[in-house]
Length: 415
Ligand code: FLV
Ligand code: FLV
Image 1 (cartoon, protein in one colour):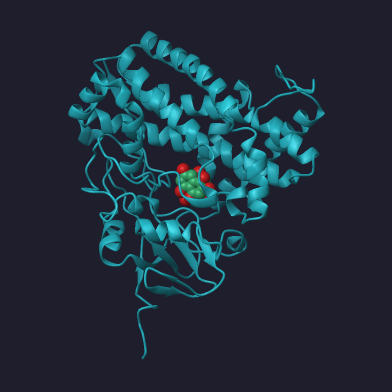
Image 2 (cartoon, rainbow, N blue to C red):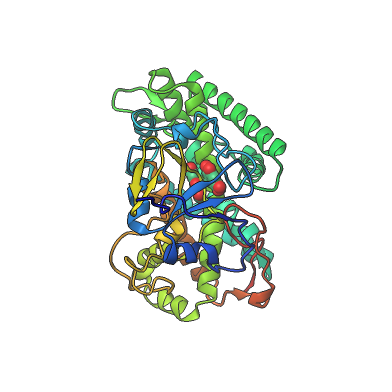
């Protein structure tokens, strides 16, 4: 029998500039009508598969027959003109190389590091809120809080000193962008890689920040740069791998939480009953943040593909060897087979975990930090400014256009 099931039509997909937290209509249609589809995005060559159901997304993101390494050197169809990670980055590695690098990073994302960062987070948040109060209403919340807060947190984690953080933000914006132009994005990748190469060399030469004293008496900084420098010295990973890893953590950590936490504030300001309940029941905050992570469409289109190393059946369709495959964590989080009333925001939702941080070996290493930052944003902001509200009608808010990661351009508020 001749089957046409394995060669469905290719959907040409130029993601629309959607306002607010509207869900991409093509993504919704594919989830419901064509859960294993073929797409073509504005850059790169040919087509790629797109897998949208929760179970299929978890399968593709876990099965070793789908390779990230094999993406390197291929011009897979994509949203951005360039590739965001450096070729040696952990996001483009497969096990066992991936496992080896991940083990090194674990040393910087320990419970102890997170606890230390929690105290620091409260201090940074307090300073930003003080500054906002001194400025007085109206203020742009993105500029005053959503942008500087995660930038400070991830920079403390990586080991980037305060005086270099504005430059980090400029590099990140040029790299996580579909509009900066390929040359500018590649130049920024080169410059930030040079910066982290120098920072790691400096850490290897000796600590310049107050060091933790380890049981063996040796002293070292336990920020990511210190952990990576030590890993390079021990032969656990190459300098290029360490630099590419640090760059990915630095740019993704600041950029993702800036936008996602701004979207959370927007979601709460436009769901007053949810906000009132959250204020009345502070114990609800962790569950509310989980539900917001599930609900918020974090990005436009899709991020990083994998290559099928063999023919693999996914959701009843055979994906041929050598074809590129994307998953959508956005649609997986709206799959009605897993989440009842998936398009509703429901702080009482129980059941399976969302996949907003990805799934499988590449699961976001910064998830605990991102959760802590988001919980702090949605509590401290209203503790300090209980009457916080938008300063313009909702329809007048400007949303980033042709973005990779979605979020408001600015969030004018008063109190
Ligand atoms: O938005 C993207 C992205 C963001 C990011 O923080 C890290 C990345 O590697 C990527 C990416 O590869 C593709 C994106 O569209
Ligand atoms: O870090 C990545 C990432 C972060 C993010 O906030 C959104 C994304 O789509 C991605 C991604 O696709 C790949 C990453 O490595």
